[in-house]
Length: 364
Image (cartoon, rainbow, N blue to C red):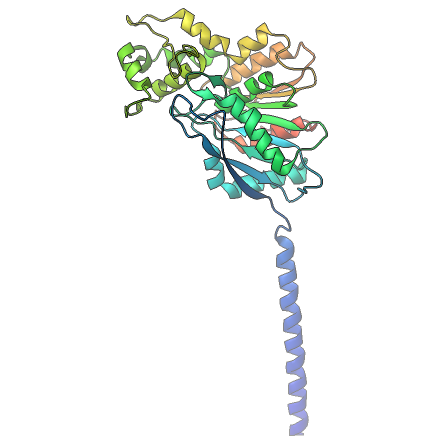
């Protein structure tokens, strides 16, 4: 009797052990099923730029380019590419540090819209930003992006042969850069996504150009700050530093005066309309108004500005749309809630989705 009870006990223990193993593996299977089975990854390219070599501000010519690659990528079937230009002071370095966020973004876009590579550029200079254009007062940043980054990325990862192949996108100063590069190289970029772009300068820029820190600066002080052969510290005032940087981008003295630019005020503190006109000549709104062929009919242009944008970038974006909607270009304007730098990733996702044929998702 005792032997029978012991045998039954052993059988029950074996049964319980087997059941516990089954439950364990069931839990493991369920937990694994809840984890992402695929995820985007980051690759960082670093190479020397011929376009930036010997630039007048002595800024680095070797920079990092962040490439976010969704799991669907295959070298046998290359993907379309979004080239992203960060705003003033931003760079690929910030995206690399926040890689998990942008890998998630890239994979989400791939799963819900279409697989793309997200390529992030570093267009900074000593002032903070280059606006991604060529200027003898700062260097050839448009050439750096269009001729060198595109070539380097696509020599490694390829690009789809189908349209759209390349979208140039950006926020704030990067949105300005996206518009300008889309105009500058219309055959290279099939679409533009401009989030809160610098435009309509009389509305968005004139007020900081007229700020006391800018208007009260003497030409001697401007020359001291602009000198590239000394250790003069950068001005602490944000408006002043921004004005110095934009002067280098928009009002260079010319190719024979590399690194030098014209200041919006003369030696007596009077506003110089001729110099201001040079700024306006670089305004995307001015260019679109003057040039009917600013964009090719086949290009798509997504314009956007937040409703509470503190720099009124939404005003300029809407004005560009009002001009372009009368033409043959495919263009849309969207005004999300929030401020200038709110929810940039979500806004980029919305613009990217529209560029690939999805309707704009309205949010309240």
